[in-house]
Image 1 (cartoon, rainbow, N blue to C red):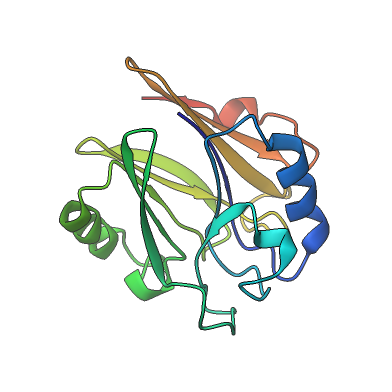
Image 2 (image 1 turned 60 degrees about the horizontal axis):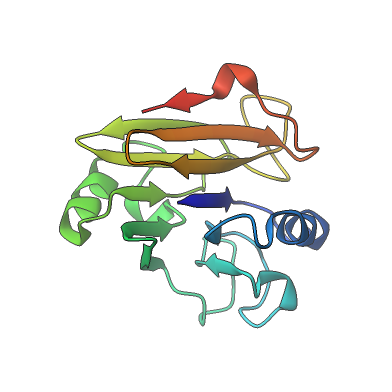
Length: 167
């Protein structure tokens, strides 16, 4: 399974459109973790599994999505409803309830990935307004039966080598 994960684009359609064009046909799913600030029927989001963030006004976007992709259960949320800036505990509980092996979220604009009890928790950072670093980022998750590879890339599609993880 190969996934593109992006978050916190805050109205910037160009980056999202470019990612959709670059990765169409190369990934099993494209995921937007909220704060797109676009309407649910905007063409730019049509290729993405997208959720509603705290800055999204369109109530047609769901708060959470639980999806099956290539035999894997993934949970997508923005994170604000789970208090992710304080702790991932509420998000961990929800992941256990849903049986998700992958949890993707945004909100903090800070990239990160960690494996906890067999579940990958990943925040791709922000493709527009990063915090804690200067690079605007997104993530690629590529799995095989033996491992999960996580890469964070800049909006210019350069791999942040110091932020590559294998689980």
